[in-house]
Amino acid sequence: MASSSSRLAGVAPLLLTAVLCLQLPTVSRAQLQVGFYEKTCPDAETLVRQAVAAAFAKNNGIAAGLIRLHFHDCFVRGCDASVLLVSANGMAERDAMPNKPSLRGFEVPSGRRDGNISLMKDADENLPLPTFTLQQLIHLFAKKTLTAEEMVTLVGAHTIGRSFCSSFLSRIWNNTNPIVDEGLSSGYAKLLRSLCPSTPNNSTTTVIDPSTPTVLDNNYYKLLPLNLGLFFSDNQLRTNAALNASVNTFADSEALWNEKFWKGMIKMGNIEVLTGTQGEIRLNCSVVNKITGMEMAHYYSGSASSVDEIVTS
Image (cartoon, rainbow, N blue to C red; front, side, top):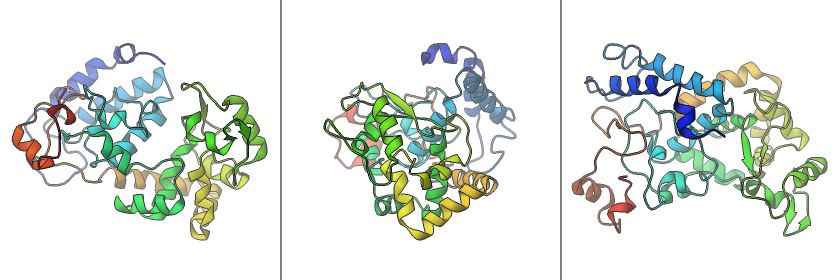
């Protein structure tokens, strides 16, 4: 994978212009709306779109990274770009187990108001794991105002991207003994064991969708009935009759899944957002502009043991 500096070489001017535009005064509004910067910075959305397109042209894997980045940001303190913040002591959201080292796409900024708090424990408490049961998944998505069917829809994003072996190792190995987890094809398990030994290198990855790994399509749903879902949580969708029916429906109709997927992404993008004068617009996407002692007291009521526990640099 290219370094952040080299990947940004072609898009940095666009991002800088977009960020500068977003610093312009805007009327304080209490909700999101399409064309928010139409008058103050009419090119903002175009510039961001061009930046994303440029990043995708250099590495098409960034598409899966950005979808996952959006999901992991919105599920922790809402869609406030807190996942972008870097902590000097390695205790920010991006440092939590569900995010490190697999989360990427940090180079492209968000256009929403930005939060100034980012804690590893929040990510650990709010992000689903590939080992979750169906009830755990339903409960977690419900906390974010997403229905079980919307969960099935959004999980379809597993049709693109890659996974570290550690996310599914317990499905194919019991220590050094080969096993085949329930809901996993024996042939697929054998293939995965050839890619991921019982003590894999921490950097070893494999595609999540073995058929069309770089295409955002409905193939994920076609794989599940064949016992080709990579994660334990994937197979859980089939243990409920109603949700399994949704899986089959999406497998039969890519157009229907496409429509519901973009609607689900928009709904997820509205989770606990900061608007109006809430939060801030960062000058540097990975560093908060400032945070005062009063703000720390307001958010944590003395629970933070040190300033560095709250991400400020």
